[in-house]
Image 1: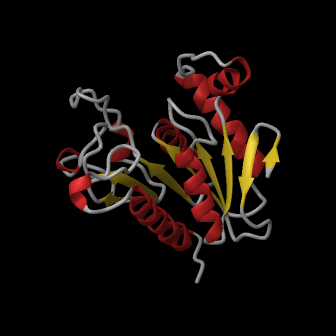
Image 2: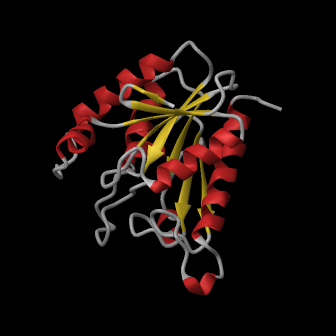
Length: 211
């Protein structure tokens, strides 16, 4: 279902809504976002996807554009949260940049949890340029689903970071930033996406106290 600049998947009577933003390079209807939304909706959650202004402009013009500046990203996410609050429990999150923006806002919002799908701990090849200082003191229950070989933060790096006790990291076997595994792993991309969806579903159910 399309609602203005948003995509809504899942039952109207869901126990909770999951508000997801996209990453830098792909829109809200990318194959990754589609499969995550469909998988969570099949588990009974209402999934709402939206786009940041630069991606919405790219959709209209067909021209690549740099991501919006941080204040614009934060304001856009807050506006989307305001549309969802008070209807049912709300989880916020997203893919890569979208999850990072959600994590920056979560502690200041009345949300039940934060879901980060491939968190961009640092730019690829620049492991000292960390983007996770706020994660050391985050209070909102948070799940980070991360590929073991993610170039934005692989397992051997992330396991050394002093993340807050509120944060759980679940590893996707041999996965990259979009959870795609190596051939040697014997796993398929579908296998890894199913594992990521299962991790997310379990966390959301716990945050919302659903039996």
